[in-house]
Amino acid sequence: MTNLATNINNFDAQAMLLNIKPNTSLNGNKTLSKEEAKEAAQDFEAFFMTKMMESMFEGVSTEGMFGGGHAEKIYRSLLLNEYGNAMAKTGSIGVSDDIMSAILRMQEAASSQPSDKIEVKL
Image 1 (spheres, rainbow, N blue to C red):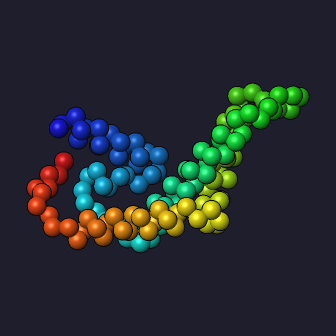
Image 2 (image 1 turned 90 degrees about the horizontal axis):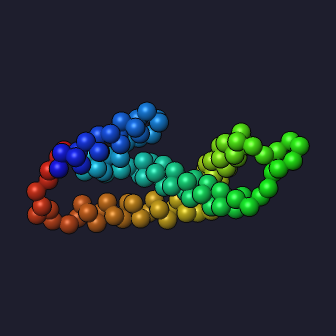
Image 3 (image 1 turned 45 degrees about the vertical axis):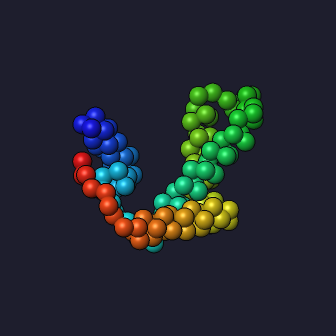
Protein backbone atom coordinates (compact mmCIF):
# COMPACT_ATOMS: atom_id res chain seq x y z
CA MET A 1 0.00 0.00 0.00
CA THR A 2 2.93 2.31 0.62
CA ASN A 3 4.07 1.96 -2.99
CA LEU A 4 0.63 3.06 -4.19
CA ALA A 5 0.73 6.14 -1.98
CA THR A 6 4.22 6.96 -3.19
CA ASN A 7 3.18 6.57 -6.82
CA ILE A 8 0.15 8.81 -6.32
CA ASN A 9 2.22 11.47 -4.59
CA ASN A 10 4.84 11.32 -7.36
CA PHE A 11 2.13 11.64 -9.99
CA ASP A 12 0.63 14.65 -8.23
CA ALA A 13 4.04 16.28 -7.90
CA GLN A 14 4.67 15.78 -11.62
CA ALA A 15 1.23 17.18 -12.42
CA MET A 16 1.92 20.29 -10.35
CA LEU A 17 5.24 20.76 -12.12
CA LEU A 18 3.42 20.64 -15.43
CA ASN A 19 0.83 23.14 -14.11
CA ILE A 20 -1.89 20.51 -14.25
CA LYS A 21 -4.37 19.96 -11.49
CA PRO A 22 -3.60 16.77 -9.53
CA ASN A 23 -6.06 13.92 -9.76
CA THR A 24 -8.05 14.43 -6.59
CA SER A 25 -10.05 11.26 -7.11
CA LEU A 26 -6.95 9.27 -6.14
CA ASN A 27 -6.32 11.32 -3.00
CA GLY A 28 -9.86 11.64 -1.68
CA ASN A 29 -13.51 11.78 -2.55
CA LYS A 30 -13.72 15.29 -3.92
CA THR A 31 -16.69 15.83 -6.18
CA LEU A 32 -16.23 18.16 -9.09
CA SER A 33 -18.36 21.23 -9.51
CA LYS A 34 -20.13 21.75 -12.81
CA GLU A 35 -17.39 24.17 -13.94
CA GLU A 36 -14.61 21.72 -12.98
CA ALA A 37 -16.40 18.88 -14.76
CA LYS A 38 -16.75 21.07 -17.85
CA GLU A 39 -13.04 21.93 -17.74
CA ALA A 40 -12.07 18.26 -17.35
CA ALA A 41 -14.34 17.28 -20.24
CA GLN A 42 -12.92 20.06 -22.41
CA ASP A 43 -9.37 18.91 -21.60
CA PHE A 44 -10.32 15.37 -22.61
CA GLU A 45 -11.83 16.59 -25.88
CA ALA A 46 -8.69 18.62 -26.63
CA PHE A 47 -6.53 15.55 -25.96
CA PHE A 48 -8.79 13.37 -28.12
CA MET A 49 -8.74 15.81 -31.02
CA THR A 50 -4.95 16.22 -30.78
CA LYS A 51 -4.40 12.46 -30.93
CA MET A 52 -6.82 12.14 -33.83
CA MET A 53 -5.00 14.85 -35.79
CA GLU A 54 -1.60 13.32 -34.99
CA SER A 55 -2.69 10.11 -36.69
CA MET A 56 -3.97 12.13 -39.66
CA PHE A 57 -0.65 13.90 -40.12
CA GLU A 58 1.57 10.81 -39.68
CA GLY A 59 1.80 10.12 -43.40
CA VAL A 60 2.35 13.71 -44.50
CA SER A 61 5.85 14.16 -45.88
CA THR A 62 7.50 17.52 -45.29
CA GLU A 63 10.91 16.76 -46.74
CA GLY A 64 12.27 19.41 -49.00
CA MET A 65 14.18 22.60 -49.01
CA PHE A 66 12.28 24.24 -46.12
CA GLY A 67 10.75 21.25 -44.35
CA GLY A 68 11.52 18.17 -42.33
CA GLY A 69 13.88 17.53 -39.50
CA HIS A 70 13.56 17.21 -35.76
CA ALA A 71 12.42 20.79 -35.22
CA GLU A 72 9.46 20.33 -37.52
CA LYS A 73 8.35 17.23 -35.62
CA ILE A 74 8.36 19.24 -32.40
CA TYR A 75 6.60 22.20 -33.98
CA ARG A 76 3.95 19.96 -35.54
CA SER A 77 3.25 18.37 -32.16
CA LEU A 78 2.81 21.79 -30.54
CA LEU A 79 0.70 23.05 -33.41
CA LEU A 80 -1.62 20.04 -33.32
CA ASN A 81 -1.95 20.45 -29.56
CA GLU A 82 -3.07 24.05 -30.03
CA TYR A 83 -5.47 23.01 -32.81
CA GLY A 84 -6.98 20.44 -30.42
CA ASN A 85 -7.37 23.06 -27.69
CA ALA A 86 -8.99 25.52 -30.11
CA MET A 87 -11.42 22.88 -31.39
CA ALA A 88 -12.37 21.90 -27.84
CA LYS A 89 -12.99 25.53 -26.82
CA THR A 90 -15.39 26.08 -29.71
CA GLY A 91 -17.36 22.97 -28.79
CA SER A 92 -17.86 22.17 -32.45
CA ILE A 93 -17.24 18.44 -31.98
CA GLY A 94 -19.50 18.01 -28.94
CA VAL A 95 -17.55 15.28 -27.13
CA SER A 96 -17.04 17.43 -24.04
CA ASP A 97 -20.79 17.83 -23.45
CA ASP A 98 -21.27 14.06 -23.29
CA ILE A 99 -18.19 13.60 -21.10
CA MET A 100 -19.31 16.34 -18.69
CA SER A 101 -22.78 14.84 -18.31
CA ALA A 102 -21.24 11.40 -17.75
CA ILE A 103 -18.96 12.78 -15.01
CA LEU A 104 -21.88 14.46 -13.27
CA ARG A 105 -24.07 11.32 -13.57
CA MET A 106 -21.31 9.13 -12.10
CA GLN A 107 -20.83 11.53 -9.18
CA GLU A 108 -24.57 11.64 -8.57
CA ALA A 109 -24.83 7.85 -8.64
CA ALA A 110 -21.86 7.48 -6.29
CA SER A 111 -23.26 10.00 -3.81
CA SER A 112 -26.73 8.43 -3.77
CA GLN A 113 -25.46 4.91 -3.03
CA PRO A 114 -25.30 3.96 0.64
CA SER A 115 -21.73 3.85 1.83
CA ASP A 116 -20.97 0.57 3.57
CA LYS A 117 -17.27 0.72 2.76
CA ILE A 118 -14.57 1.98 5.05
CA GLU A 119 -12.81 5.00 3.58
CA VAL A 120 -9.03 4.85 3.71
CA LYS A 121 -7.07 8.02 3.04
CA LEU A 122 -3.49 7.74 1.90
